[in-house]
Image (cartoon, rainbow, N blue to C red; front, side, top):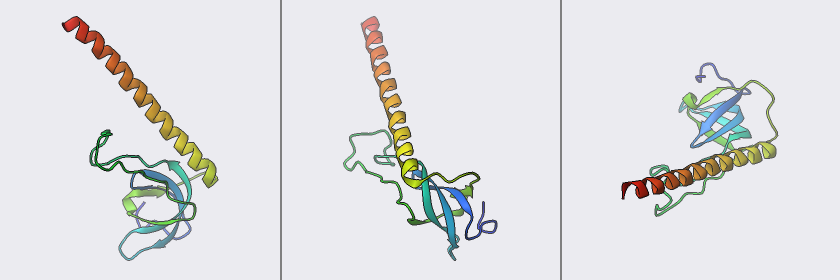
Length: 127
């Protein structure tokens, strides 16, 4: 969706930093960005240092909160696309996105543990 195809009042899905949101276009800015009012969260922002992904030992491990209900964020037009369907209630969508991110990280943790277990078996074979 480009700024030419977008107008105030359109309901969109948009990426902002590392989060995904459903919102309403409020204004087309002279800079080309879109002012989007947040109505729901569809993907919780990623935690940690984005320049050093998957590294828990960075000097500053960032906490990233989801944008708040009705918060307006300026979004580049290439991160915004039309949204069709019912807009979920903000709080429920926030908690669902948080649960999904937690489940994703738990699956990754379990995968890492399985990898470590397999590497230990290999180490025994190699020595």
